[in-house]
Image 1 (tube, rainbow, N blue to C red):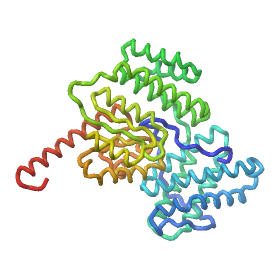
Image 2: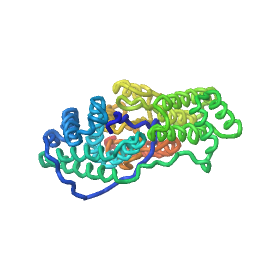
Image 3: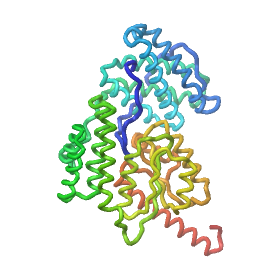
Image 4: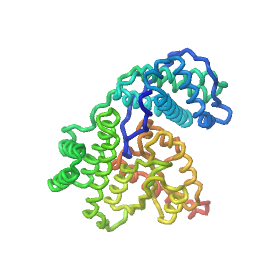
Length: 406
């Protein structure tokens, strides 16, 4: 943990990997230190104390382990403090959303990431126990008890294996093609990667199959390889950029081919400061292929812009994506704002992204109408939501015809 600052989730897809959950009632001895405020103003007080608490925890850890300064120096101390900030943000989000899975998954992800650097998991455990000691010393309350329980589960996760198997298998549809495509990307052979996609389509693969089994699966694998330090951040960025350009090359094959009957209107956007947009772009393209009118807003979308676009386009469905766990509460707020606009009454909202794959019930807690882990299943979910919307309209019309209030 001291060797570098833990970067945040690199799963660049509407979906993502799902790690295991841990559950434990094992008591952990409290450690002395300043308590943080978790119950004064609900869980948001945790966010207000994160920077200060991260510094205090890091200072105490370096007192307990003076060898850390010898091993990593002052730059290592600063990276350790930033790691503590990230960890506290994930904890705060898990407590706020009442989702232990989010934090447990993050700890498994962090353990695997740091194992790639050969770092000592004992350092991570000590940091978590220092945080736990302060939270246990906080004023009694529901949020404090929830945070203690989630932290204990995270500490238990440290004792479990961190390995993540490859996402690519030759037994999968287009598995050999996906492996060859990723190999070309890692060789920085963009032309070769393009040629492989062209060959797959010439051999009879549909555009949806290419999106799902080559583009999506290879991006999952890129995230795993980065996480285990088998490729660099530059490699990860290159693979994502070439995949986006490969998708753009295929637009000429279908961009103007509309179905005679329009299926519906989709508006899609990433939440908060999300920069991981390739998965949402895949989803939007697949909807366009199936006859939807789509309005892809991408990353860093202004809240008002999203609302106005949905209203003016006559949206039937809004698809929102969050890859970063600590953006989930922002999604909940955005959905509440969408619900409050009378022009969007009846518009259905579907969510996706890594946090929703980790916690299968999270989509309900943010106020969405549905959830899907990938583009293909998103189409099925969209069909369900559209049928639901038609049924609601029919019931409203029946009530109006009988003299009731629509």
